[in-house]
Image (spheres, rainbow, N blue to C red):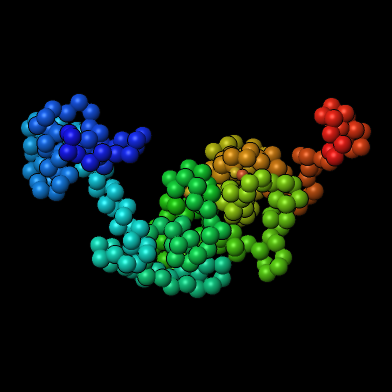
Length: 282
Ligand code: FES
Ligand code: FES
């Protein structure tokens, strides 16, 4: 094991550094060293590993190596300079009313195409695994997670991103309502929340049911707070601006003023805070 490449402190990964392999015999260590040096064909390596009983670890090592290679290929494919990238395919769609034509590696997601190819960075990458909703865009008037959608799947479709919600200088009513109700703090989830909320307005008009809809034969077109909470539950906000987002949505959805979930402190409250914290400028 002494000759094997050593990982930097605290970053031991068996797939990358054979020296990290737990409790290997001398023979196994030699096998891993040989694979790492590229001298032994993989097929032979697997045969030997299963014969020596180290097959699961060997498989894990090869899988990690394969994933690393694929990720590198894809990154190079995105940059358009890899000999190992798949042959590119033409993709045509309309984004925020503008026709776009791209030649893309077929594995590129819509999210990466937007951010890296079209430089439209309004759409955010959060988890990249379909769990946070930060990457939500609207495709043919429906909410879509762009990290789970291949750009090729959007061929011929109409896409709206957060950059396309405003009408010139005028904000979309949902954007206005988010500002009025303080529906964000850090703002990272906000593009996804806005696209989700705007598409939800359409979803309600279409009378689509949700998990909490009681009468599936007659889904509501006026959404209760519980309906909105359920339907927006795929959009996570780490700053927990949920009450304000709900108030903003309901204001646009119902067309009526919704009570603010916050208020400015009055003079008496300010005086109390100044006294409590001994702070003149509060
Ligand atoms: Fe797509 Fe999180 S980035 S769901
Ligand atoms: Fe910060 Fe939602 S505003 S994550």
